[in-house]
Image 1 (tube, rainbow, N blue to C red):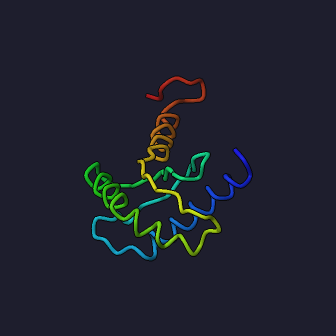
Image 2 (image 1 turned 90 degrees about the horizontal axis):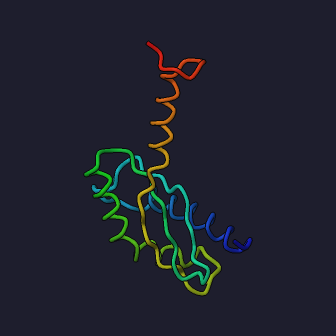
Amino acid sequence: MSRRTDRLNELLREEISWLVSREMRDPRLSVLVTITRVAVSVDLRQAVVYVSVMGTAEEKQATLEMLRSAAGFLQHSLKPKLDVRHVPALLFKLDQSIEEGIRLTQILDTLGPSGEARP
């Protein structure tokens, strides 16, 4: 990836995080929403936004649907903040990496020093 793409990924992550936490007022939006990373396509036309949501499966799905329906609002709000000709189309995907990390940590905590399960 180029430096420009890396910078755009990070800028989009920061700006979308700020917009979601400060500007969006939707009851479907879970309190614990984190934009973990953004991956912009090579042509800069699309950006996959990875979202971590703490909550039940229904809360996760509702939050993801709400973010997908708010993509136009977010793109419009990003336009003045980005120095690009076209704001990438935002595609939201659920990121399970934080929950997987917590689960693996809990498993490791149950193991003893020799790698065997504690009684």
